[in-house]
Image (cartoon, rainbow, N blue to C red; front, side, top):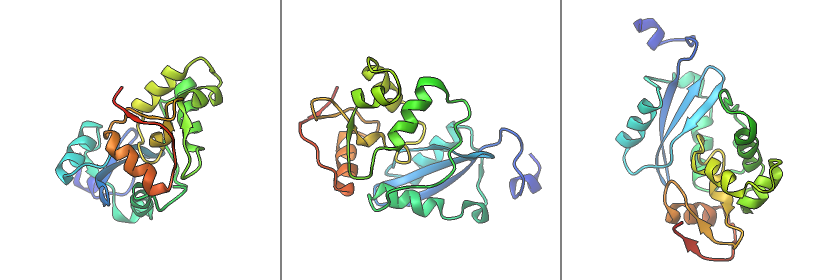
Amino acid sequence: MDEDIREGAAYMPGELRFHICETERGWMGLVFSEHGLRYTTLPLSMREGALRQVMELGADDPMPEKELADVPERVCALASGRYENLAVHVDWNGISGFRRRVLEEAMRIPHGETRSYKWLAEQAGSPRAARAAGRVMATNPLPIVVPCHRVIGSDGGLHGYGGGLPMKEALLRAEGAFWQGTIRSD
């Protein structure tokens, strides 16, 4: 790729760029397309881990600082429970149908509140698809931004989270969320 494009201004079609930011919970990678924020990584203990993950997602070049606006600050605030709404354009390209409906419904869960996988499936128009909604949350391309940590089991317990259940619990506590039940590893 030409050096002027790397430094550069305009996106090439399909090009992904990244930014690595440090949050209270660890280092996060943000991946941008020409259409908006496409992926985020979960907070990791080392910057190199976040960088490796964004590269694996296909982002080879850093996003120019001038194009970032305040997105990294907002994501950092979300990760610490201090921000209620990211209000950034998400790139939904390649995500459709039930999966997109579930992700969009998860984004509507209010800050500091939780909902069940069953509720999420119902809101997405498939009331019998709680397990499928759980699978969508498990493969969420935008953790923290799409707050999959706010989705809990119907029993009120915390179930599975890519960053581990202690991180899910910490994110909920930081938002002031209350839930009943246990932390389960299933």
